[in-house]
Image (cartoon, rainbow, N blue to C red; front, top):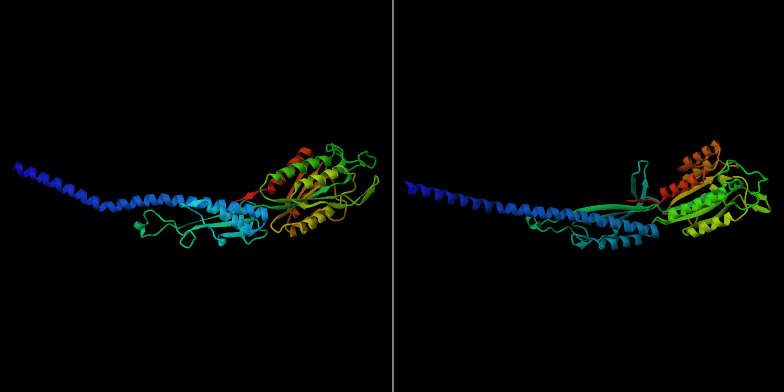
Length: 383
């Protein structure tokens, strides 16, 4: 009996070992499948991340080239070059011309950017990166695709980038009161004031404006986008101090050479001028310049209007701002110094009609801040 019991246990052990071996053989394909799936899943996630990164970089490169040249062919070439330098699943990403879509991007009141294909002005590019069966590089080959019916992995990514290129016209008040001290609370300059027949003094509102313009240009220089700036100044047709002033002048046409703007301001800072405040005349000339041959179809159009007093002709600045808005020109306004409430209200109305912002700057420091804020609102990269 004892011998029979030992044989029985031995047989049972052999059966258990055999069952384990059979179970292992049965489970091996399942384990291999799970292992292959885990490896391929990690590879799919890596490939997806690489595709997104390559697509993002291609979009930024293409939009930068578009901002600089306005040439879609060059933008596509630059985007392709950058994409091919970035590997997706072991190979540089190959893009086709049709993977690039040009259009317009604008910011809504909520701060979100919206891209419109074929929109105008053209200031953005959307890039569609693909690793699909119909893409130039095909789908992503997986390590264990044989366990998954031989199918590869297909993934897509898109990225949009744009620059707010801007054509900007500064519309600046050169009426007599701009030669008052920046700290002076008077709203006008009397004929007997010794400053009236002199160039702007160092403490004048004009020199404070000149310094603020330098800050504005420095902010513009810090951007990667290509801005153009023009300068229009206005007063009234006026003869005094052996000098005849024109009511409005284009002191510098649109240019990307900001040293030309600085030079134009230096000329005005060393010239005798004066007169009244025909603000709408200055705005009308700025509108002409922003719609002229020097303006770019791919650029946002922006007018920045500064005054230190009430307009003295019969056309309300808001009326010209509304016309400018019809030309897709955004109008920002700044009131400077001790402006009466009525002047501030008029220029607020002009900013509303022109779709822009109004700033009141009672002194030089707040004037600098106003120009800095306007520059910051212009020079934004969207993604």
